[in-house]
Image 1 (tube, protein in one colour):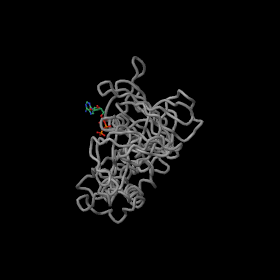
Image 2 (image 1 turned 90 degrees about the vertical axis):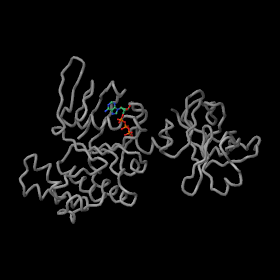
Image 3 (image 1 turned 180 degrees about the vertical axis):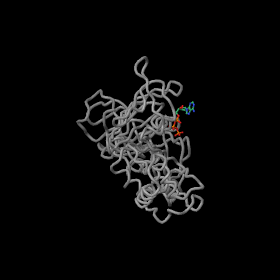
Length: 353
Ligand SMILES: Nc1ncnc2c1ncn2[C@@H]1O[C@H](COP(=O)(O)OP(=O)(O)OP(=O)(O)O)[C@@H](O)[C@H]1O
């Protein structure tokens, strides 16, 4: 079943229109305060928008026009299930009783509800946990049971609010695998801060910022060619923005001319983005002079240094470089150092914004 959604909430500066196709999983990305929880709460019926309309399959979730027809379905009549960061199971019920609770409250008889609960627990690899109380479950196990509970009521749309966020890193991969299976043929929206979730679980991503959709499209397309600094940061890419001089060079907003891999995707004068991986950027303390045809050398002031795994990220005004610690020691870098960031034209991807 598909979702057509449009809503405004003036108090929060929220104005979003989106669709989720039948069987499609859409990841919702965005910085803190972007409106991700607001979006889920509007769909779930926990928050009423000022204006807008949402239709899930044949069902109108709300229709609140200025003047026109006004309707509003309460949360339990929406065919929507929400999976939160915490499993939020009823502590006095067993895992199976927790899963059976939704079907029971819709009138499914005890035996049938129990069978349904066992089927769903089995689907999420939690059959062995059926008779345990929540206090006897690990965080990952409890979240698995919560997935079964969310699906047992056969929702038309599943909402997931950072479902892996509260789990320790060792429990997250197994739950991600389970979600990958259960989301395969299901309409779902997943709010996440983790780009891995977007890559592994979502067909499409929507990027929210300041209550608006600032970017959307197939996951790979959005993350490979980011149009906002936020999306570039998520994708682990540098994003330079500027105006195309011709098919192979771009004048960045700060006035550098960058040679890019030639492309026919835009003409001169177009507004473009140039993505470069930080590992493709090297740093030198000596003025490289005029670099070769295929190279770029940008004079940069170092703003900060941040350890990232085996590498250190050196941030400059508009670009970052990831260097091994030994290379860094040889350069004697500190915030305020003047250096040159060097990268090959062949390591860039330029695209219209
Ligand atoms: N209960 C509330 N009353 C009024 N404004 C709110 C309320 N909750 C959130 N807001 C505001 O609405 C905007 C969107 O917040 P929201 O919680 O939806 O963002 P988010 O993307 O989920 O952020 P985070 O990643 O921090 O959870 C923010 O400006 C926030 O301050």
